[in-house]
Length: 257
Image (cartoon, rainbow, N blue to C red; front, side, top):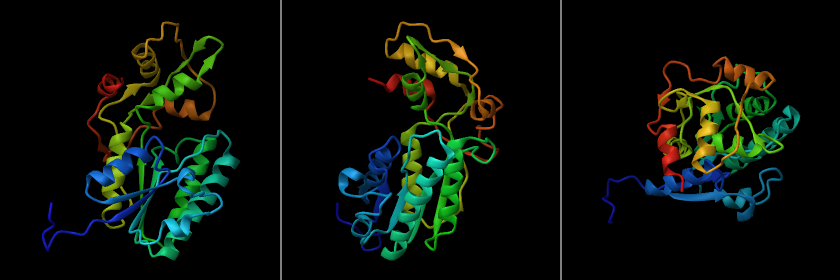
């Protein structure tokens, strides 16, 4: 299709963590909107922790989405990762003249004392201190969270279903929102993004187990620790004014092959 003289030019948007759960649909959404997407990952020669490959990768880039992640329950490790990785990313973005950095964060990280959340708060502080104009989007847990918990949360032959109040959203809807934000101007903290309705996390895990054909017992449990206690109290739910996605958890399950 030939562009009209008045149509905006396609942007080049780099996505850190572009092969991950949210990064991949973000890349897809960027391309679906007619822009050029660059997935930043170790497989593409970019290491956020050392900064290797960042300057070359961000040359000519208009906007950056930070959807990189680390799997840890340690506050020290999470903080070190996000301060280093996001710090290197925004510093390279400033050197390259990038006009906008968009960071993905989590609803409730300032209300729930949890080790990993300390790292996300540190990440937000790095972005806010950057010389590059920025936007931060906090989203609720993803529908995919149920699968992650099923796979990780088992004791012997039993898979555990943690009790919690959540309002999950599809990762692809988060990716679409990140892509939309990146194509626009910096907005600071934007409205939280959540799924269309509240769910019980233990019901989600059990439903996922049934969807994949698991026949074993999946007991509901109240896990100890400040994170799960806070989630049972509803501290991970969005505040009034949040933007809501459309795909329910049940609809997401039906899409699974």
